[in-house]
Amino acid sequence: MQIMGYRNINHLYDRSREGRFNVESRGNSKLDGFALAVMQYMAARSSDWEPDRTYHAGDVPPRCYWGGWDAIIDDFGMVMPTREQALDGDVDKEELFARRHKSSLARLSKTGRWLEQQGLIKRIVPANTKLGRNAFWLLMIGDDFENEQVEQAARTALGLR
Image 1 (cartoon, rainbow, N blue to C red):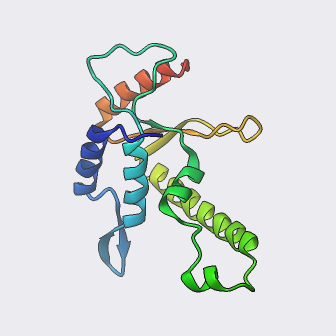
Image 2: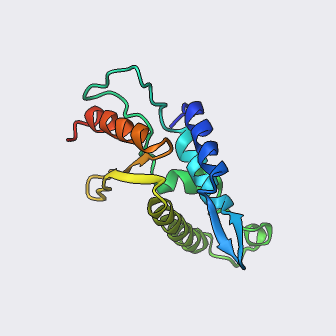
């Protein structure tokens, strides 16, 4: 997926300024940088919502990410071995990559659940592994009224109701 959602990024930072990506740690509030990075990735690869546009079935849905967790794992380099592991001939690279992929997938899934609990993303189409289809995540980065309008536009574009 190409980078296309620069206005989405601006909305994302509005939510960050509100503390929506903060977690409590030792009685203080701190930014969850990984959650913000995941959302930045999703926002950059989701089309911006155009409020004056009428969306139709078959259009690219606004503020929807469907690239899947594997795209994030790859682009973030989450399965890369350490330098020592890469040079160590005794390390089974396939087993190492499989283990690191599994732990990366678990981390992203946990982050996705947290973002969903925070009301920052909403799954509008579930993944279907039999069909090889990733979930469609709607980015809930506007105010309540705007999010409702964006969801209606996305559902129309995806042929959902």
